[in-house]
Amino acid sequence: MNRRNFLKDTCKACLLSAAAFSMADVLDACGTTMKGFKTSVNNNRVEVPLSLFATSDLQIISPKNYEYEIAVRKNADNTYEALLMRCTHQANQLIPTGNGFLCSLHGSQFDKTGMVKKGPAEKRLLQLATETNNTNLIIHI
Image (cartoon, rainbow, N blue to C red; front, top):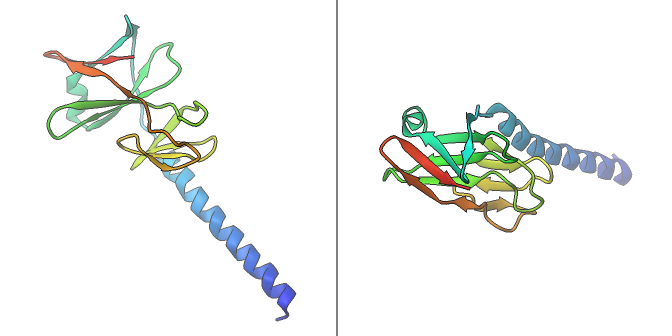
């Protein structure tokens, strides 16, 4: 094999490997889409029944007439964290994956706590204030 063919074949292999890694992230996101709980926004608040967390500690909330979904995670100490699923790079809706969130626009990745795992985003996801009453989780947006 001459040098030219070796370089061409090596470059092709590198490109295929890079494409495979990129597609793995996209396929991971596609395979784990979650159905959002639809609810209304009243007085800049969203109410979610606490019973929703009986089946899963992570819920995606889809407020009606609101541009972004909200990811809510129940912690082991029965506290709740709500993250606005808006990419901090260019405000694109995020996709939940098995281990965090993915921006399909430029590939930014965030972990379950909203911290940046991969840019171009540089800031963590916006955490929304929460409180509970006897039956509901209240998210302030």
